[in-house]
Image (tube, rainbow, N blue to C red):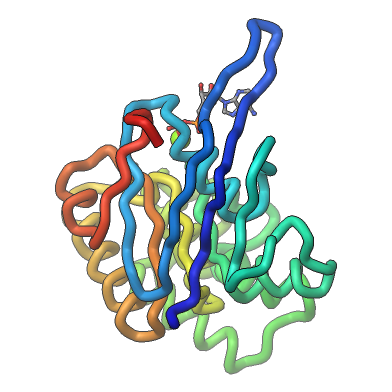
Length: 221
Ligand code: ADP
Ligand code: MG
């Protein structure tokens, strides 16, 4: 059976000075490895919250998230670390690059936090940057990048460890159409090459339609 990332009866509310915001009420869904999913729905419908919950960064009020059948909230530190390090690649709505690190070092980040990457890994990072058409930016710092370039670096960082699932929050939003097409093609290649599952939020109809499944939030989920 394919590896799954599953939501069981997730409820999520935020409590603010202005009162309670109910985002999800008893939402269940299964996401399979090797399959792509678009999350769509109006701004405020919970796309980012859902991606954060799937990564274990945001905790649901009720219900559970299971990876390969195991509740991610109950993972031991070592397994939780491995889940984030090896199984999940996350792209946030804003790139969150580390400003003190070069573009290449940002891509190598998951290895860099353990030890300085070997020559072989640096080569791998440079090859990924070439695929993202950013090889000439490898030794540049993030503040010198355009929004679209920064977003592509964040994508490189998320794909670097060949994650089982890519969780991507509007990853193509700051890109022109040519770049969108080449990044989409790259995601499709990753899906085929190592069976990566893709869960991607988007407002762009063409991108949404290119995914295998579509979930529309704010419509009863
Ligand atoms: P989307 O990504 O679809 O635009 P979000 O997941 O960002 O939607 O937000 C869903 C709802 O939850 C919105 O009403 C938003 O204001 C609210 N929300 C999100 N994060 C927080 C938070 N940390 N605190 C309070 N409200 C939040
Ligand atoms: Mg969002």
